Length: 186
Image (cartoon, rainbow, N blue to C red; front, side, top):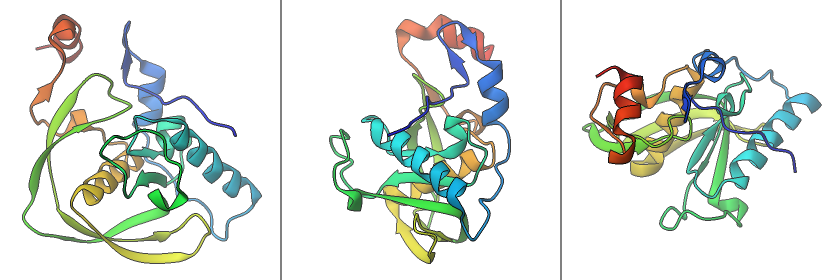
């Protein structure tokens, strides 16, 4: 199993410029039909995602791979923890949201690439996505509620957008107040 570390906009020392430049890049599509290298990239993302017990989703740019691939849980959110069943998560390659429906809903989101904070973000409760699955098969699927939120969050990563870009209320631990005030220049 090969996995990579998750890139972050900052660490305990301050802004992480190298990681930030990678996370801010717009990702490119994975070539289709998929070759051996593409399948290896997909497996690295899957391994990196499955290795984490604190992730509900992971996008390839978060591990330094500039490709349009995401992995996310579709069930088993309650206790997070290790994913054992392959039916508990999905992989989308070159995903495109083709439809957004419903009254937008405010929710608090965290992100592995923005450690220690949560941001209020408004998202659609229903989306339809066209993509390829991990086997390279075309899919056109509807996602609802929390899973729809997770997918929208992960697709943002593919476009170089992060939760701090939304301008919603930001929540962080009181013990890190000075750090974040300096970082966000309040």
